[in-house]
Image (cartoon, rainbow, N blue to C red; front, side):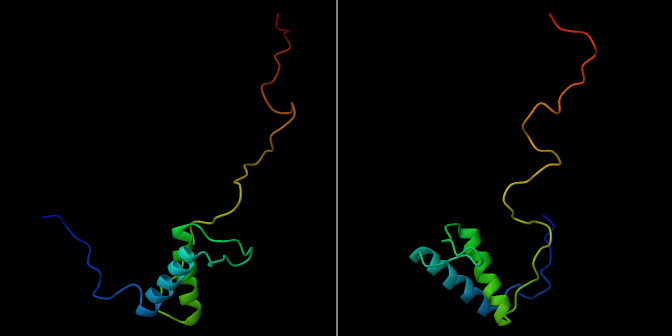
Length: 97
């Protein structure tokens, strides 16, 4: 028999949180769910769930804290920018033929 984690006997999310997520999913299907700052139409299921949970959190429903790890941003930028002939290999002083 495989070892199983104990849940501690309590639910992570309250009923009110579930209802908020349900309503967010319904609004997504209808096409009326909009994201917060930009106001664009939400098409992602995961984003709809996240919006529902944050609404529930605002109303004081039982929802666990947000994870601090993942941030969604536009493009990930490394230290350098592309373009131009700046980077690359150093020349060894000899010319190629």
